[in-house]
Image 1 (cartoon, one colour):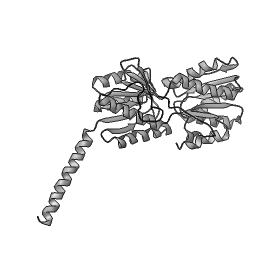
Image 2 (cartoon, rainbow, N blue to C red):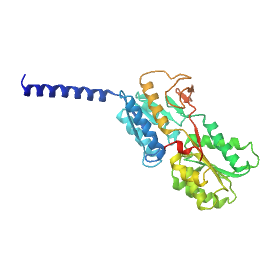
Image 3 (cartoon, rainbow, N blue to C red):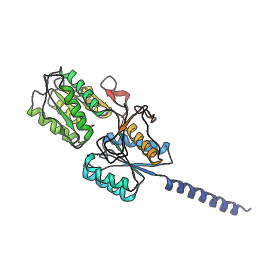
Length: 333
């Protein structure tokens, strides 16, 4: 065979290989994760888990999208577009679960698999994944707040929005816990920050003006403690006002160090993103998710499974992490 014929043969073989690889990629089921807002560090970290799952499992195609701002209507439009494109599965962290019941029902009627996170009230989902029992998580926040406040004085709670189910559950769990302490008084509860640190800051300033003797803030959105901590610092109230809530170590480090925020708790969004996509693939393949199952991710090694409010199931892990100045540097995100 001449050199030219050999080159031609190699070219044909290479082309066939590329075509085969392309066919495999095109045949891979698609799982699209839809988050509350793009650009927030919490969901940037979650995308790392989405991408990692796709790399570890090339038989499935994974990607993440979200609206430019935390807005339930914008998130709904993104999901409607995915339904129109007939993707195989949609994994969603809902801004407002109740607003998505209709589109999820239409998606499932078309054979699209629906996986949700932080939405255990949803009827139209096949699997909702919770990092932990949400009422218990809210009570943990509040117990830390109570300890800092000396179990007395005025306190308040923040949520991303009143439609953010888990945030409301944490606030309610905190309020229930505070009933153990008759000298603690809840004021102006469930302030909405809309996942915006500047809005949390402005709302905290407003509350500090309205209740100059307030002693505690419990944050719900991952950025609430940032805005509240900034307001506490600027008001010269470090050491006089206690702040606890959801947060990420890198975001909150300066306020933990200054004492404007006493402690944060979280679950790793990367792990949650990974687990959502793993569960989506299991559902696509028709595999059962069972009580006590190991999903191969820390905090989800022995999940509990219970029936959801609809035909789907709720999968619950034990994935929380508590952080203060003694250990925040152990978490590089």
